[in-house]
Image (cartoon, rainbow, N blue to C red; front, side, top):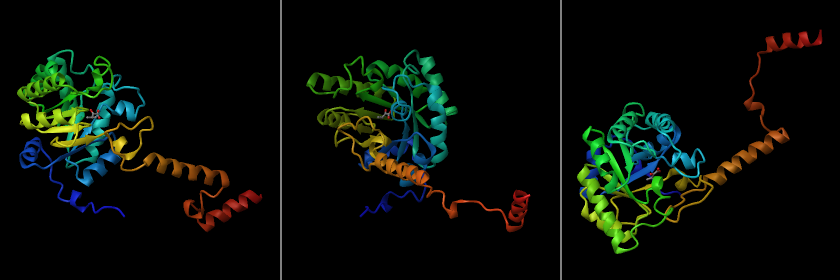
Amino acid sequence: MGRDLSENSNTEKKKVTIADFSKMKAEGRRIVMVTSYDYPTSIIADDVGVDSILVGDSYGMVVLGYDTTIPVTVEELLPVCQAVKRGASHSLLIGDMPFLSFQISEEDAIGNAGRFIKEGRMEAVKIEGGKDMAHIAKAVANTGIPVLGHIGLTPQTATLHGGYRIQGKNAHSGKELIEDAKSLEAAGVFGIVLEMITEEVARVITQTVSVPTIGIGSGRYCDGQILVLHDILGLYPRFVPKFAKRYTDLASTIKGAIGEYTSEVRHGTFPEEKHVFKMDDAERSKLDLRQKS
Ligand code: KIV
């Protein structure tokens, strides 16, 4: 039997703001984030009442089929942002700045972040990187564009850091991560995604910084959680990360439906009478007459 989801129902459609993020941390209310890459799932997530939707550059992997997020461009993400915006009226909308859209210079970062706001119609942007990217986060935030930081495993630079590895496994790297978080806080970010960081380190970061932490694979003590939608739905066939929970197996459901359709077309059982359009009788008799002559 399904759980009662009425507590999640977003009937009031109150808009979630940046201020709500810090209020939720202060009040100990967990922040719920999910990714979305299209209009229908944006409508659904917004209707469920998630607090924020991230148009992640994970789009490149789970929708476009790239091996990594590195090839994703601003041009590819902007129409995705627009589609998500059309579906959501409640959730805080965050656009993920892809690789090399913010690292080159502060000016370039501000310009591209501005495109996410003006063209993509997002309300904030996410930037990967700790201390090294704090000046960029600051420059963007200073222009009035809210920035969500992202530290720990940063997929855009994972190759440089030895692949998709758990972060903060020893005290030294734990301290580095805490420093990263503090630099971003000082730069003016409104929250920080902690990806694949040991639970102990993520907990210290969460207690140390005043802005909310959003965990993905970083344990139970973050201020909120985010998962990639396709992992929740069981729609990414390549692999499921250990930290993700599959709440349904949509790939099997879709396979079953397409399989049934294929079989019905091949056996002539689809379309049925109820799926067809008919002429009125007078027109049909004219057609019949013409066919006879
Ligand atoms: O691109 C993405 O989906 C992300 C989340 C995993 C945080 O960056």
